[in-house]
Image 1 (spheres, rainbow, N blue to C red):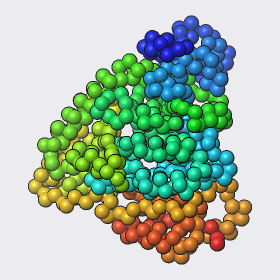
Image 2 (cartoon, helix red, strand yellow):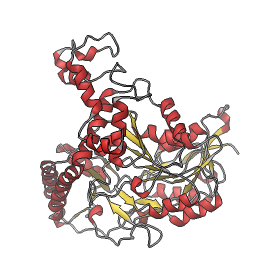
Image 3 (cartoon, rainbow, N blue to C red):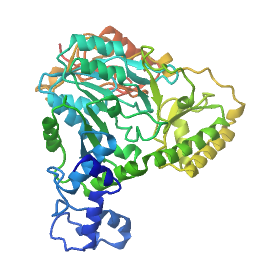
Image 4 (spheres, rainbow, N blue to C red):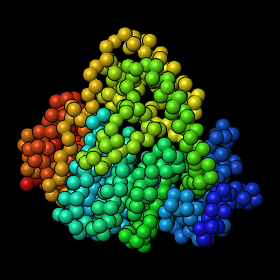
Length: 504
């Protein structure tokens, strides 16, 4: 199918349509799944029966995700056309699968990649499976929000000169709070060394469909981009896509990794939802994003009447606020809206509890903020509802009469994540002998390699990876965070009084 035919067919959702055609024939099922499309499931499970009605397997005419030659192949080709990729793969196990496949697709045992410090844990798991190495690059911090929002260009340049044999540069964009850095210089720099760039763009499946949201990493020239279509668009949970372009990544290896990792019983409802979500954006993406942005603007207008609530994503900042050089820029995804109580009375956790008590569920909370996630499918009614709840909370606690505290970004109170001075080696094997790992006070860990991934929360960014060495600066930074009340995930002790290390 050529490009012109793709454009002619963009109004179609070929896989979803074929599933409906098959169901309309009402064939008798002598195949899996066992629920037989829900035909005899009790009526009290009526909603579940609706899902079962579209839950098929690799039947004649419905194609095969592991060897797509029919409607699944056509649906993936349309997705590639929609997003501007050379090849797109449907994933039914989330962006985790895409990240794992990318790592295994570029790394053999002992190979090395360059990665930012705040990669998703699936990237670390991929490195373990590949038995590869990583050099973690220094993040840069937005002085307004205090969030890590990219990597230091100078750090990448130095790493490229030190490790010109690196197999890939692995970036995360946007961060969890919707900050998307300009990738122009980073990708150009990596490509000068002949090194591909992989981007975990899990929260950016809507990027590029409207001038008020960031561009997709594909538009900057990234070689592989993983997107969670379910996070911000209309796909079912676990529905994601992997987009490839150019010749720097071995497509055969990527496909082999996907086939190894992806279930042999893929969900047809998830695949159909990917097809439908693509169709919506391919034909009316700009309109849907504009509708969602109207809901965001309505929310921001309402919150502006309560200035004691701080919306960091709405703060005006210099164009180069996020970055280590004047060339570095960040664009805020307006669909991600952190909120904090500027009086300091209500923590993020307390705000979350209060909002949920009134029927509004939020994405997450930390010590200071809650994070509200809008999407192209958010409504003005929802915006009005949550603004009214914020008004009730304000009256309940008299926030309008309280003095606002001095604004301190996270960067002002938490130390920077350290830069790796050497590659971190990963292994999929656990030590043969339990005594190879010992538990020691943090003060005695200096010089040893961590046996765990240590994640302070907030901000929830991995600080130490398995196999990474504790130096004095790292130990002191962790001690400082613990003294501020940070809790730690992944460690043997959430207060970090003790850590697990490999015996020297």
